[in-house]
Image (cartoon, rainbow, N blue to C red; front, side, top):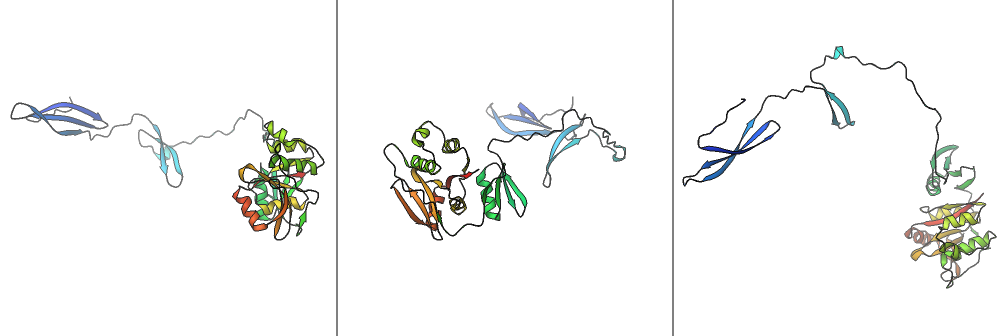
Length: 287
């Protein structure tokens, strides 16, 4: 028996125990012989519960976020603490580092003779190289982009205007135009209907080129390829496609298969137009 509890005229109807507190549910007799509930009463255990073993807990600290600590059952004398570490470690296994990476390859951004960063996708590499006036090199050592030495104007004169037909949409027209420019005759409408992506189709058909998905790059960065006489395919509204085939100080030359034109469009207007459509560009680099 730890404690006796009684109150005159009060009856206990139930109790709950939670941690170190007992809550008693109570009632009292009324003048007409019934019962009514009254406020509960509490019994507290003020004795500290003794820990019989060491425990591990996590403490949250502002500076270090959190760390794991050992709570001991009794106070430890710091002078008698022994910290033991092994003098030798036996490592069973190889020491060769195998670096697995996707087939997309690596793109190295160089600036002032040093590697600034390595990317798995060319678009990110070109964006960084554009900001630091650097060079992008692929795993084979081929330069796929660099900032500088761009002429004031250039146009791929071999590319003429082409128009969509009932059998061929604007994307197929642009792809066929690129293939024809590289000396190949292909039916892109049929290849697209097979379910392959634009990048996969172009990579399969242009074996001597590296196809680059440069979605997210700016128009100004993409003019590097037009300067190299390489057309740039751009996706615009409603899933249509156009080709960027030239530029000067104020305009870019765009082949639009939807209306069968090869015309100039203001540099600022073109930049804004492509940006509004997500800057979705696909081009290639000759090996």
